Length: 385
Image (cartoon, rainbow, N blue to C red; front, side, top):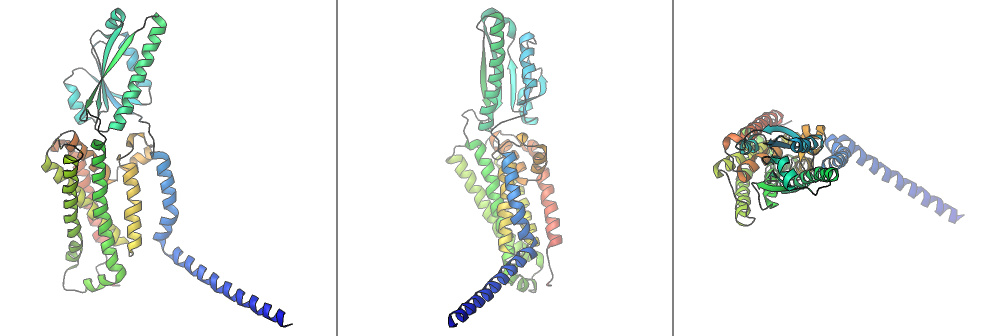
């Protein structure tokens, strides 16, 4: 009898322990469900990561913008041009009439390649069995440049094979490759602008948001708000150190790029720094906006470190061409500051272009910065609740 009593008591104690355990589990669920920001990160972030990785990662380069200089305008050149028009990998944007236009087109229209046919192309091919075609390619992104050259030579080779089968003559079309801006095909030319955009975003946006969120979480923000100092000065005192550190990082990156990675600054150093200052201003404003919305360091870290980092890596053009992505993601990429910064840095640093070439990117970043500052100041709580 005593055995059964002990067994009953043990079962009752276990039942009580399980009830207590389940109450703690329910309490933890209540805490999670009440925190809408955490819920959004937990449920939306995996979906976002899967969709981004599924649609944006692609080694293919589609819809490459090309122009064509066809001084022969014969049956052979027209047939090759038609093949380029029908290819999903190329989009013919312009027919060029003068070789002097090519350099300006690369500067203004952001072309990926220009296809140049020599004079009397078909006549040379028919009489000598050889003809020349030149592929002038933007080499600032070496990975894309290699892929574009491969696709172009494949199309030309397919036409050459068709012609040989018809006439039973071993025709030879020799593509001559000319790489602009990066003739050595160094990966650092594409890597450095992307890393600059990512590092400056991390230092400015993430560290600024965490710094102000920490003051809120520890309760010291209340002490600062009741001090004689105006709230705007409190915010500036938080931002200025990270602005200075960002300048140090910018100088370090540029020095390492030039002297260690051998990536020259082909354009104006002054405008490169000025453009970078605008980008730093945008990211500081973004960090301020994040800190005005959240009250926890962890949430600030997750938003600035994860939610912002993924789009920068995947959708800014840092690793994968934006043109290859679905239209929806191309639209999303338009609101990512790093995309515009990377484009501008490549124009100045790699292509050696001046201020006039980066006016669109500069204008977009300035507009973003102003909007972010207004939104963050409007959401910032200047009064104690």
